[in-house]
Image (cartoon, rainbow, N blue to C red; front, side, top):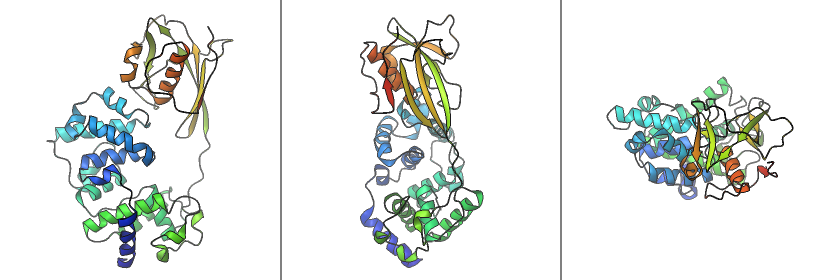
Length: 345
């Protein structure tokens, strides 16, 4: 294990990417980065992380912020529960006196913090000897140990975590570097599919005979197709929106759900994925509502850029405002994934 660790760390010293959260030992910044990196690519997270740290540079600033502002800064990353967990964690830390938890158990007790995130913060911020397993590390360990058990099964997860703990150097600072190196190896070399094993710094210790087939996983769930029919109601420089009470983007503003009008064509269509679902968003012209529910509101177009919205609905709204001749500087729609159709008056 000493030779393995030496080879791994020597490679990491020269191959590690320069990422903003690697330049700090601030546990708050590391917590922010780890939550952002869940389900999100590093290249996407970098800009979000830097903007977030300018807006909310410390725990107290985040704790004092309104939830709407927190969600607005998170917009586009998706999985908004992460932003709410981070906000609640900041409030919990401030309520406990303002000092960031310094033990693995205390970090684990923060809202939304699981075993991996707790291990990452403890290791990277405080040099605590703590194992951590993300998707990259799980793939590396499964190949190194030739683990055939599905890593997303209970038995497989347990085995991977046991192996991660057994491989840790005894020194906390070395364990910190070891964790980062394993993660980097999985992210840059030991990637899904056929990895370039000839360049691997620890290939002599790898037991996998067919690394492209590892890690094993449980059969994937089939994608579920969903339809989302919404109304476009624009009047006197205001747009009619509502907040969602469901599991997708709760509390975020979006176009109101309506019954599909008979013999009407949508003025906007797009598709977007959410976990195991593929959502077909269709927007139709709709009449002014007879009554306004508690979760609905008229919002001035000039205020939309500071209003927290789900990204697919912001793209739809931006496209529709442009089609209606209302040109405002909002977040531009992403390339692909949606199409415009003629407006039906």
